[in-house]
Length: 228
Length: 237
Image 1 (tube, rainbow over the protein chains, first blue to last red):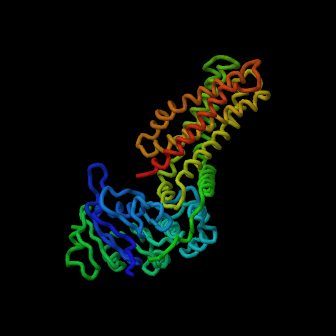
Image 2: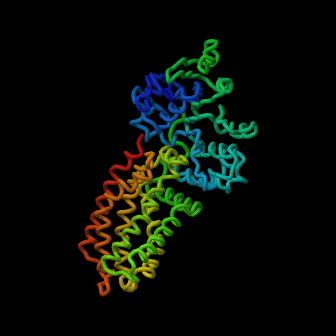
Image 3: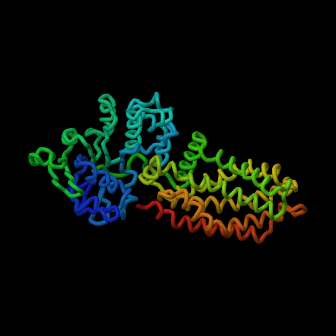
């Protein structure tokens, strides 16, 4: 029997006040696949991720994640999603270890998992320093730890490599890269990097679907037109 | 598709979530010292102002109860206004909403944190009140006063948490707290002041009036249930 898609959007609409940020967006992402969402600033990429993360409600259309319809069954998918947003979602006055212990508590996990992810991103030595004293790159590494701490099945990655140098990018690759095994939705301002990661590409132009295509089948010039 | 739950299994229960959030809030206060010192300083300074403003060496009875209640209320407003600031400004709301937890645990944890802040405030402020303003000695009436203040603290903690959760979503959060909170708190404050009045009288009994204790307890229960019923909706988009 064919598996249902991990993520499915049909005619998704989301407004902020009178302004429609997403209009009639439809796309289907298979389990374990990577969807790259491209578009200029304000195209609706982050809003789309927040809807998939159950933090925003769709105003029209259908959204399902891991087979559960949102927002009605949002509770059933929380805990199986990981959101790496622009904000790290870490308390500045707490240390990295304390922050992760807090998030582990919210997911019913023990301290050993915290040490495991800190080790994976090379942050064990600096994990007792307050987050406000760390560099942006280190904070981003901790944010990656927070995102993958509970082993999510769907990763929602908003500019995941922002502030990371090549060495740090290589460290987080097994956690949030192609090889992690999770279904991924990622946004990037670097189209070539996003295309290299993607199985499917959604181009957003003014909140509307400009194209949905496999990376190697995108019309010549279509990506450039998103940013024109 | 990867089946089943993520690493967290079924996630923590409500009580575990409450303890997790409460522990984090107390740790944040311990690190930042943003709320408690301001509340204590405000209360002490207000007692000094009353001391000179009333131009009396000591006060007692209903007058003393009024001064104590009003001072503790305004000091509490400082804590109420800051209760959800870290959640709003540092993404704590989003992180909490992404977790597979009972959302009411956030209400309970925040109300418990505020209750503990108020109790700590009173541990310092009530003896200071006894030294700076109060005529009759505190010792004999202390158990009754603690009971009345604790019932008032429950109302402040529950209503304060509810109001703070509403206020923090708005741009005018510093205004919304007092404007919405004070009218809701009025019956509880009347109860605390009227209950504490006889205790602080020159020859008062050490037992708070049962009528005001009952009114305060009832008010606490009603608002606790109301807050529990509506809190989920406040967190929704």
